[in-house]
Image 1 (cartoon, rainbow, N blue to C red):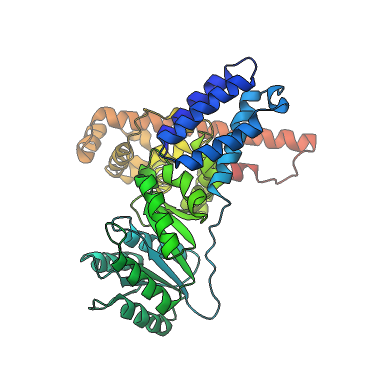
Image 2: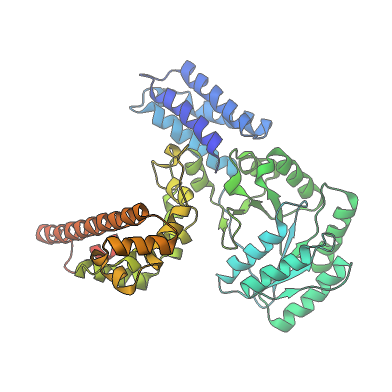
Length: 454
């Protein structure tokens, strides 16, 4: 995500850090490169101009020039201005009490509206609500069927009709929502390849007929300035409350994410970061600014870990480490929980200090599948007692998993290293607890071990 702009920023800041002393001249030279980096990222020209003016006004001053670490100060200023550029975080959906909350999605064809409708329904489900999806896109032949498939995957009802009148469908959907006692109704409306009068007329009629509580503009982040221009036009003609940016995981530039709030004045609510239905995230400008500058995003990483990691399983693992009874099934379980957090390279990029060092790194996602295949080809005895695996067993496991003996050997070696590391960590935790209790810094029974293991 945003690899190109992240690398450009890193090059600029590396040069600034290399200066023995920052002057007004070399600050301006550095910001000239920042300006070029933003323009290359397809950020709106006026947005870039205003951004550079704000950064320059803050960076060129005695306080910065005389700072002990002036290069870091400039990075902090750029970070703060990026956050301002993308606006304050606004990820709330104002749910209504006593009546269904109506959410209307709109955007150009191909922007990902239907998939976003499904993802939004899943997100709303996780908040304890009962959503209803409405197939109001009667222009694209496969749209209704696609929404029905998504609804089945999510176990969410989908309202549809064999009709070409989108307004009628939306009105009837409201009656159906009351019959089902749905909390939220999500309307998937039609798009076009470009903005035209027919599209806008239909959308305005739907808006008047259902009076939605929230309208979200869905746009493809990879289209850069085209997405921003479309958002501006939709806002002028229709008005909307927020933006859902799709395909952000494939966007190496970031022009739409950095421009859309400044141009429309409307917040980015959610971002699509993958094809799966759970890959819709709330948008937080401060976290995104940190990721753009290669500073990681530890808060989002922790949130993903909390969603993916089963606390009961973590307790069991902690006990097994204490008893030195951890087996390959436990190893496999940990890998599967890591997989739930998203693509490995993306997860690594959230770790502070690693984000800007992953360029060119080939993270083999298939390696996790090979590990899973190898472990599943073992007997229960071999999984719990890997030391019994001799040469003939290794050959059988390799043949059964479609891998090589070298792959099996490598896995067993990695497992032994992991066990040794966990034992050392456990020992270190016990030692730290004892030392803390002696010094009066930690109360007796302080759950340090459990917290660190999670």
